Length: 408
Image (cartoon, rainbow, N blue to C red; front, side, top):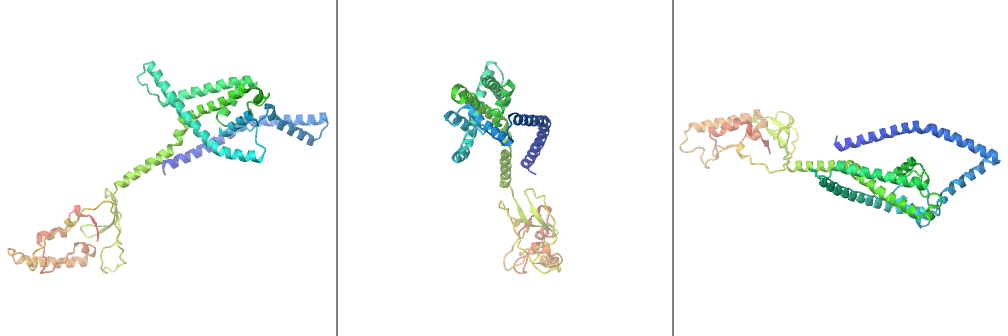
């Protein structure tokens, strides 16, 4: 299994395990509190209905009025300041939910606005994060140079420490400001800053939602928008260092595998067919670049005759050669003589008899071993060509070095 597939399966298993563990912990921490709050609210509802002598339907109407009136306490949500705040929450995918469009045209424009704005925002924040990391590396090199350090290069550990410090300072400073303007506790302010900068945006705590802050406190509105944009740039710098390295690991592995496969294919030599050994047996299979992978196949044959009762329809062998093979004329050495004469003038007469006997042995050898006959048989007319005894010896016993792939 590929390393990318193993990594993906591991991430899936780890993510679902993390979800299960988180759900169990949240169940333990919040379920009892939720139950007690529900009982308290039900008791207050019954007390109000009994005290003011109203029906349950009237109480639900009052409840709806209270919920719908809450966003208007911040001022006019859809004037330019409020609309800019809403557009920021859409583009940054925070989505507090403090104000939502009510008209069909507003909802339709929100969808098209998000389709273009969200990718644009991600690219912008990613680019800002890269520039911030570049600036941090320059500052780190200058500081190391002032401190007379031997290695003045900014490592990833240095950049992570700088970005982490900036994130902590941003959250701490924003929490102090929101605690003052909103009247929240410092811990709740830290919680709000973290939920905002990580774009979770639950909406349980939203700034600029009381005392007509959108209309009466322009400096506070400006601070809140700058905090959101600058804080998201810091978070983008952190993601650039930590998360994107793991996100791009699969892509890097795939490119590396493709490069290795291409390099191996360029230097590969692959032959397919039958290998005929010196004793006439056939090894059928594939020979790679090293020639060390051979599978036996007794059914293959290179004999064209109907011998031994095992005749099958002869298949045309296929050969795949990625590089031009060398010549194999040296496998069957022979010495042609002058036409019209079987021996030289200086050759004794007994050699002609000896050559004829060897020719008869070849004919017998062909009927006994038909697989080797096709390769080793050479028709020698008596008055056209003849082989000397010294030239016929390699045909009867080929050395192992000549056990090559045959192309017949």
